[in-house]
Length: 160
Image 1 (tube, rainbow, N blue to C red):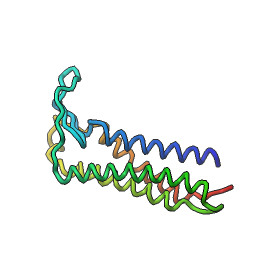
Image 2 (cartoon, helix red, strand yellow):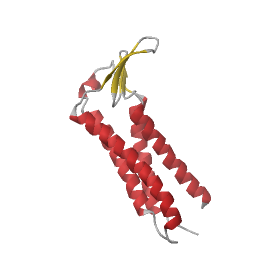
Image 3 (cartoon, rainbow, N blue to C red):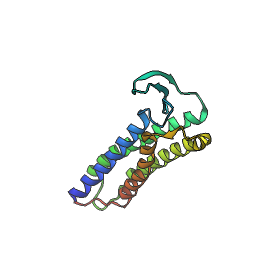
Image 4 (cartoon, one colour):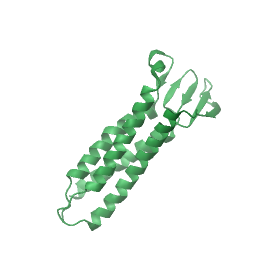
């Protein structure tokens, strides 16, 4: 049972790290000496030094991506906190429904954010000069992992 709890906690912390990195790092879209994320657009030299960074546009779709990524982090942190609370207060045989629901919500939020970001840039799909960066890919990797850990929390029963 201890190894199962340790594995669940490691999976949850891995999801949290992926969510934080994908939200903070400036690598959602890269190419032609530019890197773009949810917060700023930066131009870089050929040696990799950053020259100028400007705030991202105030488009409604970008604000919705920012909001859903932040919500996914909040739901995941809240889920981890609730897991530890329920671990010590839940009766024997009880299930971690609330923890699982919040983690599933975190997964759905990150999926929504990545999907909105993908749909709002159809011209980038045709332009070979730009490609999606590693932070964008990490957001998509965090989605199934968050759903998986949420389902595991819902299935999990507390034992003595």
